[in-house]
Length: 559
Ligand code: FRU
Picture (cartoon, rainbow, N blue to C red):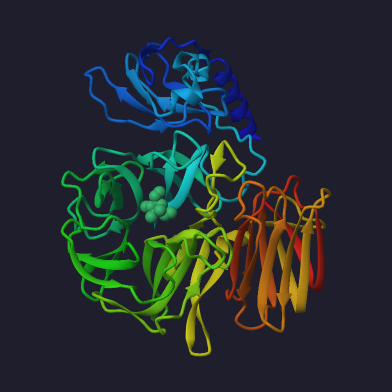
């Protein structure tokens, strides 16, 4: 109710925004300048996704430039607007990368006519595929979860974010915070690009003992500065992660390799040192430090282990029960094409990770197609290992049929361990916080619900809508496999890699299945944690019919 009232006020304010025919100073076929003298907080830039990027330099009153985002300024039609915060008198220096033969005369571009100026920006949801209980950015593009930590009752989630369009570009750290891992509040941008580069993935730690000298309990962020090279930088926050100052002596870690990124830092008691995990080509490097500023390389892991179908990215190293688990996101190379999360189980002595499996053994954390960049929250309470993934796949993430925003995170999951034969595997269960959102029982599925299925032997489950779109799930008791088929799930037209059936081993009999449905995603979990599968779906109408053979389903609404 409250949300609607706020949205109406926001919409009214936006409709008051001035639409001024902008008269650009044309300097060449692809170069123009616009002086901003409107007194408004934002210029609302008209975006057309199929247009080429235009590079916009924002030049201040002292003629200095700090930001230079790439924006797909509208040439023919406007798909949506993005707000660019400005100060009166600033100059936009714009270079179009399009080719004049295809775009025509720059003076006639739609962006000049459609540019608006406003003190507000309406973020009211206008997307039918926007999840209700998964984290999404209010607008713009999102990929990996970054810098997650827990402190003083709050879960902080930063994320790879393009605030100037819903396609990958202009990486910054967006920021949201939650008290329950389900409801997220959007906060201002946390870390923005600088002369060292755009801001790629990384992590945060809470420096309880002030080892870095920024203060007791300072929150320290590590991220990759993606410039001419990839180097590791740090920033610190003394207000619990709300705002960050960049460290003056960045970068703090450098190495001679083109792919060198995604620092994940944690404290290791055994040596009394900080450890930084880094993804380097197709291996993971381990570095250490006493003060978070001076780092030394300890070792590398992985050249002969697991899957090498693509680049290794976004590492994590976790102590779970009596084992160490090295998380390795890989793209491409996933079991069903594109991106996925593999992991290794073994030991860590503060210097080196040793995998306990044979080199050829590959273990996947989730057997769906839309589960990537999984990393854990640092400083989580009660010794828990809580992780989030990015719910998409690089094969089609930029093409999925949403516009106002692109991509959501998975629901939060707690990791543990289980054994099957000689091998130890990582178990995945929905974090306990998801139980609190379970509402009353309902008869039919809706676009945001949880379904619990007690399984008896082999089972078939069909979710469908009146348009005949359906998702078919099958448990084969003999083979002990669970499969989800989305070949007729709705809009599958945007990528040939999308229509697919994914299959997972259940490591024993599947007794109970938990399904989380949220507008455009289905997450399936074996209740014992031995199977997880995350897949996107884009039904033209919500699935409202459920048929189950070989099991008994209970459907819950989401509160
Ligand atoms: C993984 C990744 C990271 C990188 C980031 C850039 O999805 O490629 O390796 O830091 O995305 O946005």
